Length: 236
Image 1 (cartoon, rainbow, N blue to C red):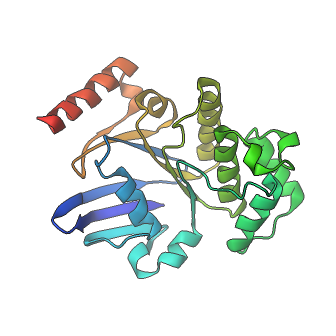
Image 2: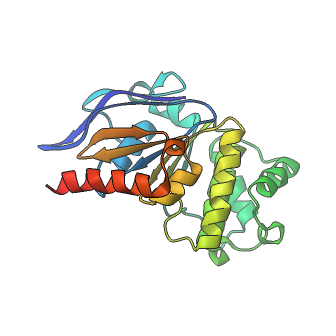
């Protein structure tokens, strides 16, 4: 569903992404770990078509993003670190508005089924979105992506700023979303939550993918040690 082929991005003399190769299949969750500036957000932006590659290609469901960004984005859902909603509109109104931008008419029964699957509080959907916690905004962002039937969802630091209970809940939601056949690509700094949710974990440094890990093969301590070793090499 997602593929990077030698994906490279330069900003002047700065090399933000250096020959990235990766693939994410339907039902798989790939978490990208790395320090700020490692290339994680650049990777997401290239898949979203927000910027064009210097070399190589980003593909979404077989489409080369740079050749038709709008068609590629039509197949994607995107949940930003801070989900932007209209605060004076209710959750239902926000969902209907953003789904409408994707050309999707909201069926209330389907909407309610998606919200129940995401464990979104049933009594909150008619409240103004300005009253929502970050966890609720993240869930509504996922609901919007699922309402448009996105088979690929990109998430940028979805767990940042969540309290432990909300983070646990969102990890469960992400697992269930992937189990439904959706491909997830997640940028995160949270090593331990990445281990809980990911099928594979990629470690990025200086715009390069320096390790691809099966999280089931390592303990949390071993994963942390591997990550810190790569970050120490980065600083050296």
